[in-house]
Figure: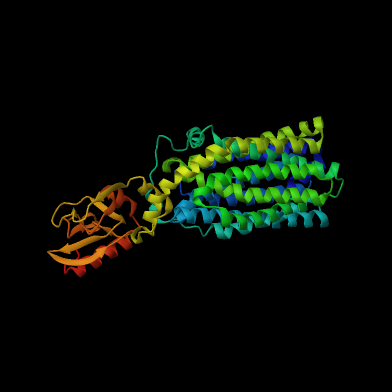
Length: 507
């Protein structure tokens, strides 16, 4: 907020639009560079580096503004900081699947993240409003620099599980933005993801310029009102996060994404219709609610639907689309405002956003219903105790490797002494277990068997027979052992306990 107001005060509408375009353009360029770094090194380290460089750039921008160095120096350093911070969201979204264990956890984490972001979107503009009211925009930049410096503390605490080091990476596609963009286009029919993200961010980029013009040239109120209106968007974000925690489900992620974009258009219409700061605040509130519903749907769906080795590239492509959309919107805004005035420009953009959201709603609704089948396999593994320590990204990979098996009552599933190369996970029914002819406790849904042969490279140590209609899903030895590297304590404990119970010395 301080940077945009400073650009308008010292350089007029042209400098304001140029700064907004530069914010998006630099964000796009930095996203490509950071995406390549993320492929080659630890994502948590990249995140830390991004925040450090952003803090340093903001400090330089503040010093340049206070000392009245050339405006270009101040704006260049400030836009570089904002461009770096634009990569935070895709980096965060790439990290989440390694830190949670179920699809519901991932959706909840993204809802919580947007809630925190919404709180920050309230507090930041409030601080900007107070700073702009009591001092000058150049000194207000110091508030932003202080906030980013404080962010270094929690970012430094990010720790990823050991299994992150064993992740699959395709060296032929690593660092390829174009490959990520192709994946993004293929995730939904008609390129729904880039189209919806592009139209929404076009509106966001235009709003960066049009809101300042609305406040200073149309409503003719003081410049601190810009901060209060963006704060209203933060309030809406908090309300939307509370609403999202109730309505956002794994089976409704894509509809939440499209619905959030639709609400963005509604908020723009409200903003265009009013002639007072109160009505404008209501429009920004609706836009805040829209953001809180849209973002979790987008940033949860992309890493779940993309091939696992391409998830980071697809998320990076999302941020590129976001930055390009914002750049185009910011560049178009002055011309639209000059041609048809500020309010009609906001209204026209709002109508366009609504129409695009309605266009893609049916296909995304169908995709939501189709993902329920895949989620069932993931949910099965997520409820199995030996897989609890595994990150969601690993569990979802294993879910794609499952093979279903159905057994009639009395049918032998595995026989003691036979070679074994699969792990069985019971989905439905009961299984009778015997060792050397002696019965052992029955197994039921979410129990596993066959792990000893895989872990110890020995023949089967028990005979398992279907006690009634039995359904199991099997994992091959290689998939299973690769997945549990670094997180094998629960399955080792289970195997050792079974061997001790049967009087076998655990090797």
